[in-house]
Length: 397
Image (cartoon, rainbow, N blue to C red):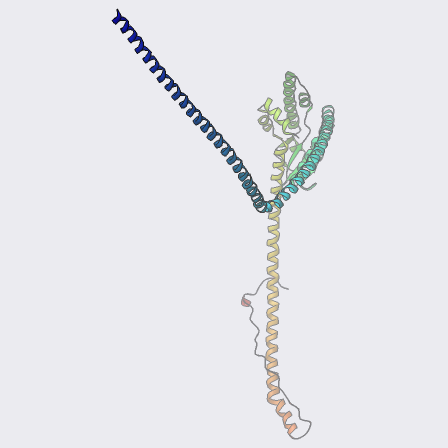
């Protein structure tokens, strides 16, 4: 028991020693940990201080760099502006010229637009006046056959003037035949030929069609226009101007004073032209009649050229005869001149051989005052013979 207690007390004493030793080790460990934490804290504070110093240095460097960059940029900008001013200075004058030219162009454009506006206003007014005149003309042509006749005659006269035909020479305007028939124009052809031209065309139906908005009415009136023109062809063919007009008449021209009138009739009746031609009536528009009149003018020009050629031939023959007579007279004058030269040379020889020696003899005998007696020169030039004198002939002087 005593041993057991002693064992227990020993164990307790050992446990206490172990506890004290463990407490000492724990205290040492805590102390070491505190020191380590202190060192870590110091290192952390030192690192924080270094980071702050680096941040401050970075900020300072950034401020220094920005200042240097701003200064360099300012210097470079000044130099760049100076150089740019020197380089682009020649363009200032060009830009000023461009600005002045642009302003002048704008001014001219404004003036042109103003002028165009005025011209458009005048055109509008003229169009309105033309429309009013056209309506008056349409009314007159629709209501009066005399007005249609005068209009056709005036158009016909302008075409004749454009073709260059002379009044009362190549044509006779509004001549009246022996039996009272009256064509509006008689075109005279070379060789006593003639072409009667009639300009009295019925246009009332066409004008009615042009003024109608109803398509059926318009077609009906255009058909009537074709029938009226066909009836007028028959009436014109029945007049037979070849029996009353002086000169050979091959056909009569029915002048339609507008391409649209003729086109409408041909559209409705495509055989109208052939039917009229079979009746010796030629339906002609202004273009066709102008071509016909110019052809007649060319024929008259050819006739005039032929007449001039004959006159030239006659004048040339007369000139040849007169030149022949003149050559004969000139040859006779040459013969006379040659005889005169021979007589002159004979007289000079007589002077030299007979007269001058006697004069010198008298001078030697002191019969008179001596003088230099110079004989005239002989004439050696001979008269040139006219060519062909041996073949002289022709009319007398």
